[in-house]
Every structure is written in structure tokens, then in C-alpha cells.
Image (cartoon, rainbow over all chains, first blue to last red; front, side, top):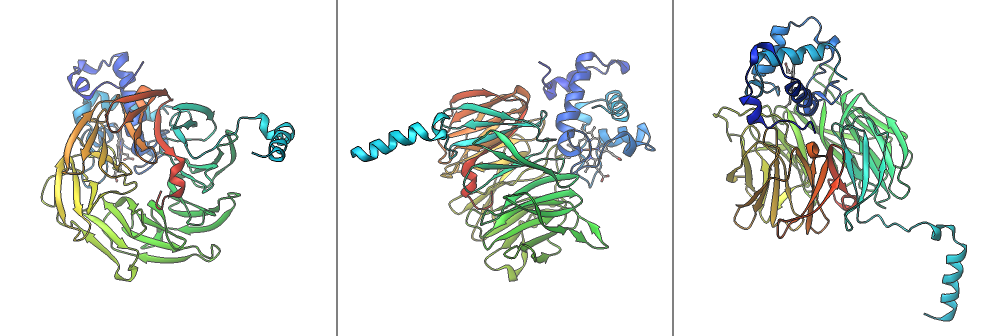
Length: 102
Length: 390
């Protein structure tokens, strides 16, 4: 069972200086597929939110994208994910996005 | 029974090939969408049984279903623009087309002969023959300087019409398809920013779109369309900071109880109770999360509410007699959708992360049954075939 961790648990997990445990990686992958997927599509080809494919993200910096993920984009439907992940984890997710997760 | 009819019956039994297969009526069947595997299971809602699995339906990360009026066929609208026609009698895909790059939902016409699909890319509505899935009409959602808008909230309406909303354009369009070759489109511009979904009243009188980009809801009175679209609750929550919305609410069906309409607030953890006569807010019921589906039991005595991430392990039951909270249930992880049996004695709930569907008795709120399903995200019963707006 690799069900999504409860959010409280997510928040409680320590940042651990860039090290992301295998369990946590799975939780983040699940989050990406299920909860990001609700707007960006299961295969990340887009839905209400834009496609998050390597080619659509090319030319946008990791920092810029991490800011988007953590703070959301006010005035758009992109919500802030800061309560559920830290910056290292957001950067790790971007790495996944840049290398076609499916 | 007379002797001759008995004889006839025996003869029919002996010689009709159909008699060897189990006869199956479809009125108490349903379809459960399995999000990741691109499949659907066909279920019997009386016996709580899975009858078959149908595969090859594409990307169902967002999916919805309508039924033919003979309740034999289920039309599944997938995220990838796929439109699949499932034969509930033969457990197979009768036909499947990919009609767009990215789509969000669909509807069946009043006469049951047309299927309409709302698309994100290319933004617009396409209409197909329900029988053959051959294309009949293409309605690009063109606005402003020729751009195409994503289309949401597509429903059927009396008078052989479809109604839908344009997310990017902030418009509502109605299209009369009495002559499907020559659809007659009526556009209502400036209805508000970013309509995210919409619902049709079960009597086809009102179409209401929820707005994401500004406060309130947009209301079109289909009995008096010439009056245009009017805004309801235009000031609600105007001055408050919006809470983040991790999943867009869905307006499906019409949670109406007596004179009241219940709808999810957006960016607020509330269910709104709106007076259907004056269109004024009666009450905002505080709830433990961003509501996604606010659905009335068919007799409307209860309204069931599920929530967006991270509160999607909960299910709330509201008593519409006095709008009090009856119970907060925690059926499992990833409560994505629910569907009532046609007369409402039970409700089926999709638990995506538990790979299960759980069935509740709505009177006792006790669990009746659990069925396995792979990442279920939508439950649709054939009773929808005979309801306006579903």
C-alpha cells in the first residue's frame, strides 16, 4: 500500500537537508499524479491548468517553478503547496517533471 | 396461464438463443470509472455486485458518463478527448473515438439522439450521433480576438438544447439542435470571470454557473432567456481573503431542498444555502474543507458533501430540515464522488486511494457493503438516463 500520507504527516516530516526518503518520494509522486493531476491531468498534459511536460517547462528556471508550486499564482487557479511540502521537495518534483514521470 | 401460452413459452425457451444467456435488465446497473487503468466496471446496484470490467477507455483522470435513454449504453467522456460507448448488455466498448485533445464532460440531448462533448483543447463543443458517434456539429468556443475558450458546465436542456459556459471568456451559450445540421447559438457575454462548472435544475428551468474569478454565481432563467444572465450573491466574500482551492468544486445535479438551493462556496469552507425565490443567501454552513460535490439525496431530505485535498477523507451529511450537520463520516482515503440509488435509500462512495467503493444506508448512515475498484473516481447509475441535466 502506497496510499497518500495524511497532510498532517506531510507537514510534520522534517526537511532533512535535501534528502528525501523513498517513502516520501512515493508520497510526492502520488500527490503529483492524484492531486496535481486534478488540474494538470493524470498524464500532465494539461486540464484546467497548463501541461507540465518537459517541453512546456523548458526555459523556465527551477527557482521560478518552485516559487509557483510553493506560493501558487495569486489571481489564478494555481494554489500554494507550501503547507504540504518544502522547497527541496518542490525542486525534486520539478526534476521529476523535467524527466517525463510517466 | 393457458395451455397454449405455456406451450409457446416452452417453445420459445427451447428455440430462442437468448434464453441460454442470463437475461439482464439495465435499470439498476451503474458504471464505476477506474481512473488510472482507463477502465470501468459495470455494477449491479441492487445486488452490490461487479458484473464486468470494460477496458481501453483512455485517460480517465477526469471522466463523466451519460446514458442512452433505453439505458443500454453508457457514454464515457475521458480527459484525453475520448468518447466511448459501452454496451451494458454485452460488457464491451461498442465504439470509441478520440474527438479532441483534452475534454471535460458531456451531455445527451432531450431526444437521446445526440451526444455533446465539452472540450478544453480545442476549446468548444462537438456534437455526435448517439447511435454511430459520427460527427454532427462542431461549435468552436471563439471569443474576443478569435481565441478559443475552454468549455465547462455542459448540460442538456428542454427544447432539444444544450447549455454550456466558457471558462476563459466568461460567457454562457445555449445551442438549439432541433436541426443538428444548423445549430442555433445564443450567447450571453459578461456573465462573470471564470465560470468553473454549472448545473441545470431538474425541471430544466434554471442553469447556474459557479464563478472562480469573482464572487457569486451566474443564473440563466431558461423560461425567460431574453432577460439574460443575472448574478446572484455578487458581494458574497468579496472582501475576504480566499482560501486556497486544491480542487475545483463540481456542480452536478441540483441540491435543492424545498425553497433552498445548496451549493459549494469557493475559496471558503462553507456550503451556501440560497433562497430559490429571491436568490438571496439564507445561510452559510461552515464545513470542514473546500466542498467539491454537494449532492441531495433524491428526496432532498439529506445533502451529502465531499471535500477537496487535504480534507478528502471526509464526507458530511446535512439534514435539510433545519440545515444542521447530521454526521461527519470518514469512509476512507480519497473520497472523490458519490451517487445515490434512484430513490435514495443508499449511496455509493468512491474511495480512490483505498481502491474501493463503499455503500452506505442513508437512513442509518451505516456501511452496507464494500466493493473493490481500482482508483475509482466516478460512479454513475443508469437512473441518470431519465433525468434532465445529468
